[in-house]
Length: 335
Ligand code: G3P
Ligand code: CA
Image (tube, rainbow, N blue to C red; front, side, top):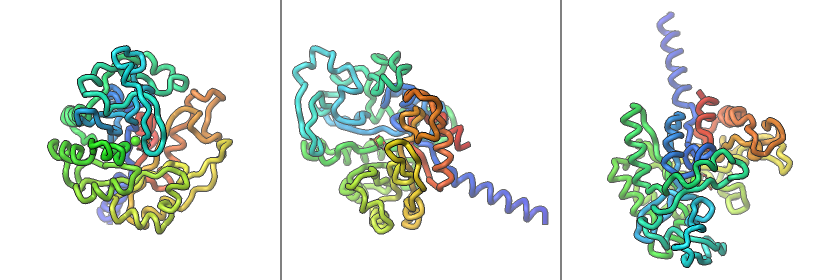
């Protein structure tokens, strides 16, 4: 009898262990290092993240690099570089006019001469000391880092790349998809069981990728009118035809009012699970500025609030993963 009970207990423990949400290091450990740098990803791995998240854009010579957007003046020193002053231009990207410097106008060799800067210097002043230290990494360098650290640490470190502006890059003859799949394949990532999720806000892009790879796909969703239909029970069933999971803005699960008051949780997690989709919300950030009012500590927007409480709330609601700028806090909150 004791053996049967002990066996049941072990099975329950194993089930709980597999149900634990994964921690996705959003742009690396971007709460503590300038985003999308090898230093940011390395710190996230050190802190125990399960996956590291590079957003991907393309260079002029067709190399995938990690940047949140193709306009790079917010996260590099390009605006101070006199040799590139003439590259400043205005383009329409996804229907919006944007002025600055764009990755597709630089070769990889040129981009490598730039140095990363903290995107949010007012909220994250401690990170400014790293300005000027780190290069823009290629996706291949990010993969190499993950695989080197996997061997060194004896644990899997997943990759969670996002295709940024995929329609735009197709329109200028620098499509992201084929080089992305080819590079992943070259490094041994090709099956659904491999530790990779590919994410996009563009459904058409994911449908195209579905025809190219067995790797898991994630449909990203903003909390906006553009995604309102997709976020319904019926819409989520439609997403399940081409994706393995969804990456919703966290307010699609726990609404927060303009003054920071948390509302009652929605049916989103339940509906997504009923459609067979994993749920990986974003973005969990430590600063009070990004937290609901009842999870803030003190009055400074840049002060650290109770991020662990927010993450545990979402874990209790059944999410399967969390994107966090502070993977160390997320790991501690969940384990
Ligand atoms: O990729 C998940 C989340 O990061 C989407 O938002 O804008 O930070 O890439 P963004
Ligand atoms: Ca992203």
